[in-house]
Length: 377
Image 1 (cartoon, rainbow, N blue to C red):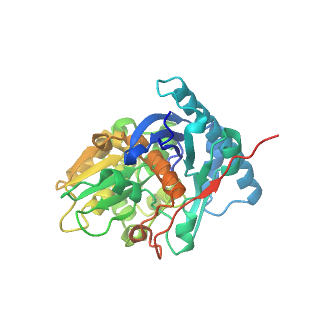
Image 2: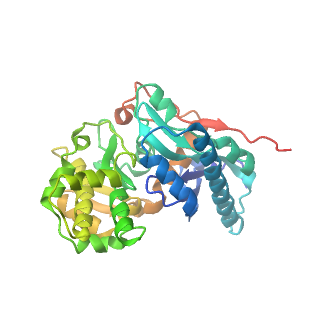
Image 3: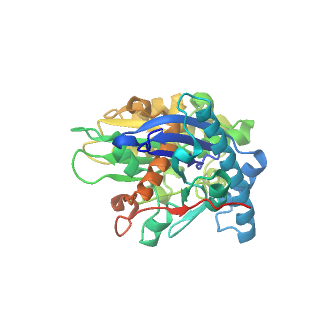
């Protein structure tokens, strides 16, 4: 394989806790090409532990964090090896030594800037795979006054910007975030609030399902105005950017607090419909915060598959044409993992990875920490 090819792996396990997204990306000659992608679910025991750590909403005990980090790292190693097997079985003929580095977001278990904790054990991953690992992308931004999030707008700018057209990128994972890419002026971006996390949590509690497929359950319910207003009155929604959040804030306990403020709602389906409306309205508010909203918005993340949510979001945002990110070359499920492959490349080449206007950091900086594989005896 020609040595000039720039191959990177990107790993993402986000707030939805559905598992690990892994991608292999070629950035050769200044271009972007997604070669392979793969999803791997978390073992149930690990998922339960991660959920407990997040919902606790406090920095974890050091021993528990270390033990969980190692278990999580082993899952990342397994995901990487299986991604590489896909590559070995294909016509690409890519060997492990052809890959420059792995960019790994890690699993966020606490995010209250100026403190944000992502666990993953990057050195163990590097040692076990034999590939350099770049992780802890948030810390440099946090150290200079930033939120450490969202981190993907720099990648969005690289891939989704359009000449003479104001566009936005909306990622609807567990938490939703938006990147605004104007024709002139600064890029902006921030978390808009809950994406899928509250809907997933509620249907899991009510029916034991992982998610509301196509939003079918929500679509059959009735939005309850009293509950909707109570939720949207949460002070977090009124904050000006830069802002970021996570499951440590928007979770089942948050829903229960909101329900306690309202008259009894006997139908859990109505609660699901209202939670979907909260997501749609908070994203729509972000899209329409300027007098001249984006012409187009590219939707990515798991929420892009929720047909009812997409219908409501388009109805609430008539001035913006919503379309899947796939029209710009990246299927909705893989945008964030690709972003961390890009951030790894940026770190390796000394390229700035944050956007201060987005995170609130004092200045631009290179993001990430490198772990070089050690020879294991």
